[in-house]
Image (cartoon, rainbow, N blue to C red; front, top):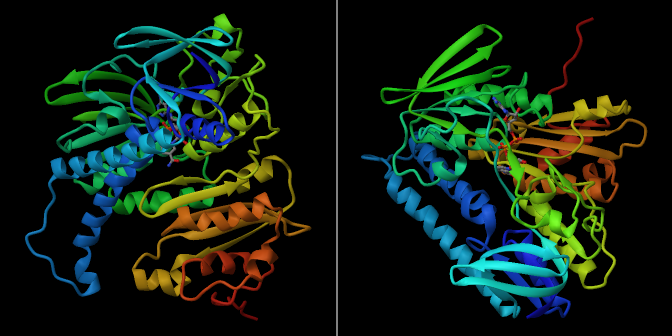
Length: 467
Ligand code: NAI
């Protein structure tokens, strides 16, 4: 069969690309080897956020006296929590299948490989089939990476994929890697009573996050009872009665931890194997498939998007790149813009960030100004009982142009869009400060922080120097 566009992979990159190509009048083939929705829907964003919601509700229930409420005989059923998660995922998956179908996209469930630049071989349960495609978009995503540590193959050592299938909360868990996956799962499991220790190789947890937020998150983790150990390298994992013994080299010398489970959260790697990239002559390396700003690979007419490119491994980056690739495949001229990609960490409270951190701006030797505003001084946050956190804004010192926004606090993942829009459209902190924000809302924290760039915060006690 002949198609205008064949998309390999039905994640948030692939299915969006397929729909966009179909919207532009293309005859589209979408090949998926497992489930529609990819990692994001089946083993990532959606299941984790569903579990996090249960965790948050459970924690709120335990705090209910603070709000004048009484709840007796409370508890949770982990199996029911997991079942709800499965139901949410299945419902959304059905939605995507419906979307794809309504766009007249041909879906084949199987593993695709290029046997020539315009020819795909798809292995399904019932054999192999070949398809011709004028243009190909590769969107095969990523999988958790392993680490070169003896014992990593033990059954007690799991990745986020297996953790999402647990039917019982482990008594204790050591998390290797204090990145996004490590921190998000630590919050979820701790809420359900698991004793969590996070071990991070680099000198700080959340190495990609602005250091002011990292400091606050460190305090929040401590308050939650989650132990963190930065600058520590796991050297071996051994099976012992009831779990595993984890050995690590730390600044204080060798340390050992006995835990029921180990979560490997040391990054993800692009899925490039088995795709026939060499046969088609597509350039790639350990980090992923090389693409230009049109999302085109080294072979004209073959595009790659999302995690498989190794750049900004986020669902929304993949979807945006999917639209760019599909438009180019259908003859338009679209360019991928990586200048303002928000990224969010769904902890309690959340972290969200866009643009440069203070450390990155300093490393680039930019003259900057920064401002911070605490949620504790925001009426809405106080009424919600969620006052932990801050909004930090970074601007160009001379022009006030927004360079970065970093939020730790309630609904940070929603609030970050103001900063994203500002950076993308080259706005200044004044543009934000002089825009009327509704009261009482959390968005006022963003406005106040923007005022702070000019020294004009209203809701901040003025510190007077004694004469
Ligand atoms: P990551 O790259 O964010 O963090 C991995 C951490 O593990 C790093 O801090 C690294 O220094 C550390 N590490 C590596 N090897 C280690 C070792 N041997 N011992 C101790 N520490 C070690 O990777 P992560 O958290 O696995 O996430 C993978 C990707 O998925 C990221 O690109 C992330 O942005 C994305 N993701 C995004 C989410 C979101 O948007 N909310 C949620 C989950 C994942």
